[in-house]
Length: 390
Image (tube, rainbow, N blue to C red; front, side, top):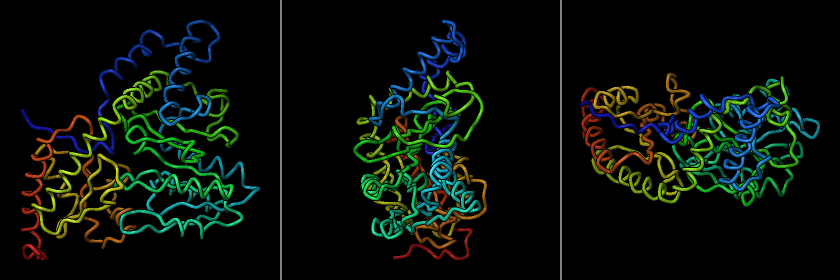
């Protein structure tokens, strides 16, 4: 049997069997429209309320602060554009970072075309923003700070609690794209002073096409999608009940297994981080060595090209990534890797491996062994490589 090692869980995850089982019930048995007033529809509506409670619980939010969306990207768009349009009379200045997900960056670029000013904070070599830079960027017209919880490419966890405190002190809304962190590491929106938070089901072994936006009580956003009165008149469109129930089931499992999962994935991640530089010369770890997601590994290899690396690994049954799945078809190097100061040619030779609860130590060792061979093979083709550098 052909061997398969899936190490691209930052792109998407396997849907757990328990999640599929939960969803099937709402496809074939309780398939009523939650907006219908008869009992069949009201059972679906009640189920949505239960799902909302489960999702709220994992981030210490109130049930009525959770709004379901079609994706994390939609949630990001809604948070940024919704705040901008609703509070533009107070100011038209937004602060973000240069290494955000494109759902954030492109939303900010859209607003710039419509009269808003956006400050893009630099990051250090580990992908961390400077709190001093953040404070210096704040203006009287600043209405929103949007900084991701953890980076989708290099895994660096930003100082979210401190950012939230700065935002609160200056009476500025704070949004965080938590798509990569949600369900994987502890998040408390109250303690961290988070006003808006985006998440997605398919990053935690739930279905694709379902996300959510946490909106702190008292904050009003302009609607992104207009139509019916769903999601308390905030997001039109018949709710994806099976998907939402699958999301809730995935959240339930993630909450129960989080401590165990963090411990397991950290061990596997650290094994990668130890073995790769030991076995391969000119391999550079990208991202913070400690303050990073437990399942994220990202290395750049000099003298090779990332897409070729991925293709050869795929021949050995190993699935990885050279960056974000949203930009994997692009020829330009990762904006994240360029943002942390990597040279163009080194950024092109990057590999992201992202773990799940289903990966094993034996898979790590197998991957490292194959990676050693592939890197050596590709470097033998490079006229720039002259052997191991001391």
